[in-house]
Length: 215
Length: 215
DNA sequence: AGTTCAGTGATGCGT
DNA sequence: ACGCATCGCTGAACT
Image (tube, rainbow over all chains, first blue to last red; front, side, top):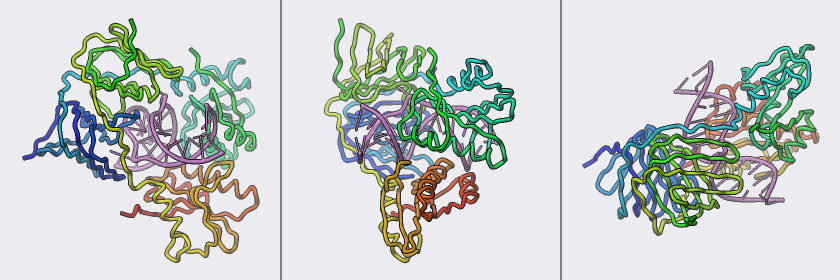
């Protein structure tokens, strides 16, 4: 007899878990915390680390058969074999509010873009046009500033420490403009940068500009 | 009076949350699930979505003062103002087993590297030397295979679908070898590729090779 | 549906 | 401790 489980709950139980889908995993028997939300989300947590051992995102369907919990979503399946239930609690009127986040990359990017034409701006160059999230076939450019001499200033913004991947991302954008015969100068604006990335930028004539999140 | 809280527990409560650290966030009052692990991990979950609204990784210190829970780790602080506790349950003997994952990138990479010298291998070229995780100043190369004519075959392996970032990563490696005057051919091996990435690879003389995870 | 990118990414492994 | 790359990343925004 199989029952569809829709309600939200937490369950602390001795169990073992098998997952199969994009990857494949097994979890040896033990005591784990199982959380289910009524959007289909399922999480299995061990007693350490922040991330769940197994999980199923929203949209999964949970069914119970005897001592077996099975969650299915597209090609991915989680099977939980329950050995002993330590406790079960249904969660009613669980709030679905979102959090409000500050100090995002978008905020930093907008701040830079809004001040770039001023003399105290990032470039201190006579800019005639500014684009945010400028679309190209090789990705969207955070800030594109065109100066009075038609030089294209390509600016990649990062909220944290810059790594090699960010430098390559910037290079992909500048190569695109070079291919279509534009004069380009390329920048990364961030609070910090790794030493490898710093070396790479110098060797490739990229400019790093330090910017801090305003309070 | 402030008490250090070390035990693992789940707590369902009406509360509000403030976070301050690398970023900054607020969560309006509501019913949320609070999970604490004895390694310091703290998670605050809303009634939808897989990822927790707020969290603190292992190493955080949790303290309770009246109706206030405060978790601190380095420069990051979470403050939970408790309005009403719906239930509290301590979790004893919580297992800390790890899961065993299959179909990882490392497995795929090793499989390719081990078979690359055979006639049925990825390249079907006379290879004399194979390096795994070959170190360069611009990152580690998944597989470097050198053939009898001293051509450097640079292979980037991805477990899932290839995107533009992977192409740029590969480009960074090949440019490094070009700079030190080597003959280079560059490949990405993966089960799938995005259309944008496919176009990019063709335009930049990179070769995509489809490989599937063995069962 | 497909693709890209941010993220308090987290986590693990190397130096 | 820092740097780097992977992840079943998740989630969001846009095409």
